[in-house]
Length: 294
Image 1: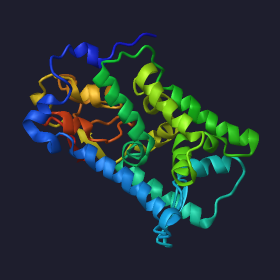
Image 2: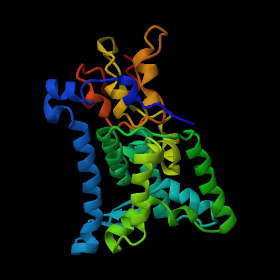
Image 3: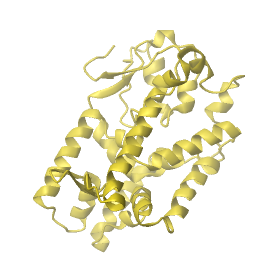
Image 4: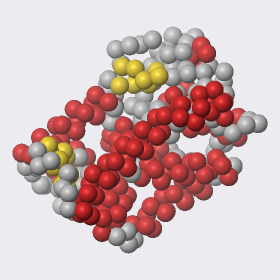
């Protein structure tokens, strides 16, 4: 299916974010993006201090870790796959999963995608370059594809008795590659970059990644949300739609006033990345909680 990008629809004379830059300055127009990069890079650094310099702040990896020899953290998606393969978790693993589940149920599961996942930096770079080069996407996938892939990653352990997805998971490959050498992991990471750049806009994170699909399921009732609380000030520049990794989540909250729709972005695929807040020179968007509807 041929898709028309929001960049084409805008017919703009100035690049995305120029109004925000002029009004808020560079820092104000990129505040949440900067904080996300600090979060992603700092987490990688904390994992690397042990293998590279012998300072073991965090032992393990993003699937299962122990912080300061005290705080266990375990990825619930990986543990679910382990259970499907017939492996029972340890008590420490269960505690780690409960901690992670509690956190993401509060802040939104797809916060993992925008604030934790290192592959997000690769896909964001592809999106930025595509806008700069004015490239047009030629194909698009159904966003439900990622849920079918999620189901497949849970069926394969039942059949094989192994956590098959972790052999191909770009997050795991990237993490292991940074520590032990990238090897063929480079091909996967570069492949995702080129896929998002030339084939499908936000294709990996927005349409295919089963990890994002799993964490979206934890966002149905999360407390932290983004709200278009000042939507009456919207000037229809469409910059928020262009930079949002899940643009379909914005429209109901931003344009639904006449239909009585709350300005709260209540869609489970919102990543709480904050780019709509950064990019809006009219300051339509802000972080809020689910209890505050307007």
